[in-house]
Image (cartoon, rainbow, N blue to C red; front, side):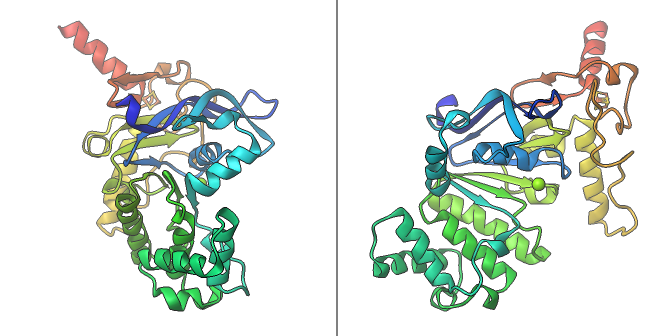
Length: 327
Ligand code: SF4
Ligand code: MG
């Protein structure tokens, strides 16, 4: 399976420059060709930062202190800015919630498409228009009308679709979708995610889908990584993680989702302590964990179970030890 991995992230850590504090801690995950990988967790857990590293757009105040990010044969962390720009334009498409700022106001959408296309190719304006119309049509927009519209004449959903069309025109190998539906109403957002999955088939690309909300991840991803405090605390086939969660944080995420499902308005995600409260020593979740034990704030839990579904939690080890004892 290693050969068909498009993206391989190994042992990746990111710190504030000249600081020992890790913002991302020893991340390991890979995305096979043609698959969708989900990263889920609260805001501030390091999801977007991970995307930033993959895009080679890490801010100057941060530094990669260990690890590697490989897209195909390219080691992202050691490419020049020029090489990165090429990869961002062609191999990786990036979608965010800020689709409003994707297009310049007061310039017709079509004109902006043509500029982008002619910046990457030597097509004539006429050929470029054909390409633009083709992709606007692929994202199920009334292509001619959108082409001739100004950005502020389009709805949020239409603008997000147009930005997707523009991002995928060069047939990227990887689409990074970082909370692409946050600024949209629920139904429009669902349709955008469905569109992404449809385009994945069309382009035969891979997707990194980032969301704070498990419901976006559950039926759309092959594999999911649950992030907390810069760590992936649980990872596995999405179906396995959802049906048999191991880590207490994953369980809480799933529970809060079930409660929301039942339309009990006053029961919002019941987490202990403040969101984003990360323990500096031991298990990062120990300050909020309902199952916290004595050793948790001293000893860092390591990933256990097997390669296909793991969690970093001392409970897993304890249960295992007990199993060994009784055997
Ligand atoms: Fe909770 Fe301890 Fe497991 Fe961390 S290691 S998730 S604090 S039980
Ligand atoms: Mg984010």
